[in-house]
Image (cartoon, rainbow, N blue to C red; front, top):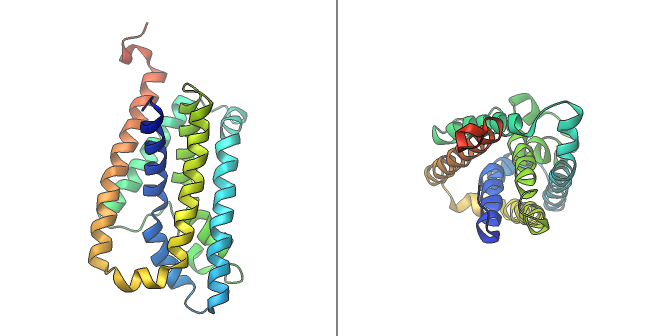
Amino acid sequence: MATDPVSFVLLSLSSLLVLVNPLGAAMIYVSMTSGFDADDKRRIAREASWYALVVLVVFALLGGIILVLFGISLAAFRIGGGILLFSIGMEMVYAKASRSKMTATEKYEGDEDVSIMPIAIPMIAGPGAITTVIVLMDSAADLGLWAYGGVLLSIVVTSVVTHLTMANAEWIVSRVGQREFRVVNRLMGILLIAIAVEFVIDGLRVAFPFLAGGA
């Protein structure tokens, strides 16, 4: 895991941007809001980004406590989270719809307020993003207060980027074809796989210190 400020912040930001995938969120957002007027579309984009931000910040700040309550070690969570991220990355590489992001039922439920469910949760703040912020905050504990701020800043930036992408979704979708989207999605999937492997390696080092040459 990166230890210097710039590398750690870049790792945090890239991890969240890859998982949330603002471009993919924009394309799904367009299909789910096709029957709404312009004012409702803007409201949905704004509220979905805000709710997702709140969820991710809450899990970033309280995720460690939640794990303790359930008796889950951070090492185990790192390994399990890495495996989850790896599976999401593989789905992205092979251009499959990620089952961990949104099911078909979730996609068509909640017609009254799609900003909360399913756009904010689980499309933006899904299991992968929640896992990532918890793991990143655990890593920040060894680096100092600046690292906590870096993770929270990454969450805010990711939420803002996602909001701007959804707010301009129709313009973006009109200029990004399915072929280009698949290429970008697969590249992001490869990056996510690499991040997932790093999470698993870090978890194994904590769970089995002898792997890192410790006693």
